[in-house]
Image (tube, rainbow, N blue to C red; front, side, top):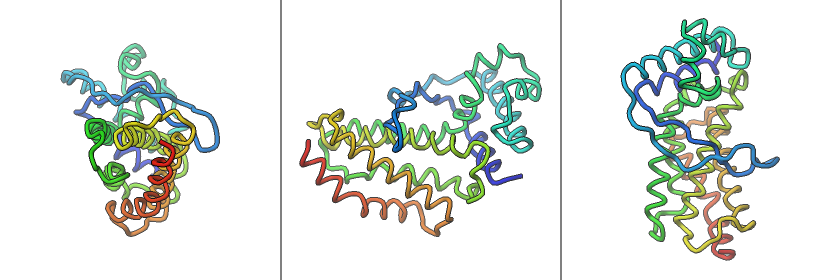
Length: 240
């Protein structure tokens, strides 16, 4: 079993009793290209009944097994249906495609980021230390870092990284809105600052994971804040 399989196993197994679904996508532009997805604010769905939870866990379990056997990229929806022994209509009642099924495994991380997002929105104008809410990203990824390795860049690694990037993008935007209430977030200079803060966070996060750097989440986040705070905050204040 490869390292990426462990990543999927951990993440997909984390959300069996939670129903915080990823909303429609919205992210900042990729560093090298245009916006790929757009997503609205984080939302939480109402609790689901036991039958729905059992069906979703059945699909997740089948998906986990197939990832270990075949790798994410080679799996089809039909493979999942055959392994879980469910009908196609049942699958599509819960998930749009296999990527949506994968995303459902990030529910705990998503719920934590949603809480930080909401807290950032509700503390507009208050003196929350700059970039402090990004600590939640490091803390919750730390729970899964033992399943991550330099060799995990196969079979879905890029998708996992993209999902994390989307969460970071939304959290950074919410934090900037709260920290600089008078700023026009669509202004190019402010958008560039948000892109820089989000990309720097993701870059340091991947370096921390891929190289198994022996830092705690708090140490990694503190390094990120020391590197990014003064320049970004001064730039945004100047252009707000």
